[in-house]
Image (cartoon, rainbow, N blue to C red):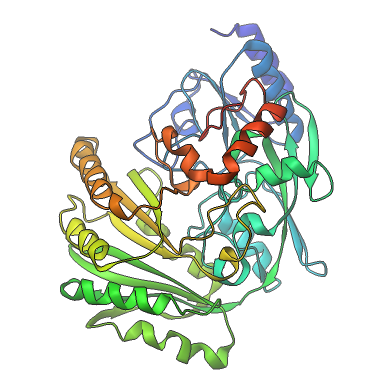
Length: 448
């Protein structure tokens, strides 16, 4: 129990609002993207600036309060909110400064990818991000950052130039290749274990403004053929083309969608994407020129905030026929037409970075599998959770023993070692150096 006088003192000190359970907007303040997460923090501090973050950290340390940190709050696991603790919320910290001449951009920790993309695309530039405009830049960057531009420009964390960080003891430091370089290594993939990043500076790349994106949808009766074609084509895809295979429902009917992003020369576009239309019987062709900003938000509607979600994920070294058959048959049994199975092909620049160059070291296996259960009603939880678990168990013979930390779900803390592989021991040592008391533990935790 926190003394009312202590809470009042913190509220008076902060430039942003402090929300408690007695406030009318408390239920809104405690929500995160995954509607299945229902946690009740003691306080939510909406920080207006770095000074507010420092004050919140000092308050939590002084009063022994558990801390969760929220940037975009989009993770399936809901680690951005905790029961009975203090949520340090960065969503008011939205400043973006683009240096087009230097091809760099600085953005505060509450910025979302859609906001960053709109600012940088004004200059025809982009930071490699994810595939959802509503995801926060903080969580994606700190966990690695797979996305549409990874073949050409690598992971998001590969393009991080510098970070301003509030440490567990309340100190503020700058971390980059020259200053606090070991911390900078850990931040590029190590998640929220090492501090609160209040500002990121990224390298920018020329992108767009027009790219070719969207998806070609095929009849599910030909799913085996389509996925085999995807596997074979992806192995020789150029860096300029990123391709995902998705088992989804178009209305109530299952389809295989081959989703893509092409960011190469216009005179090579048609020849490069032509094979994506040659896998079988097309039921819808939505692959077309569009703005990069549109592409980044194209799939937002399928993942609205508040929808209930469960996820299981792993990397695959190959996509043999037996694995394809399991996924195709398994998706037929989904209890919800909102669910999806996604196979991301990871190649090109993201795969050419040495595994120990950043904390995000999962570079060698080309297929990233995500089994995503989506549904709307709490009474549907049991059936959908069982489906996700069952399909994940069925595909385990093809698991490389690696998992993308940003795809871990609630209750998957036992898989954190899988997320870091050869880098785990070094991360444990750095956690002991920078956060010896495990102050930052509401995350996919690396204990000191």
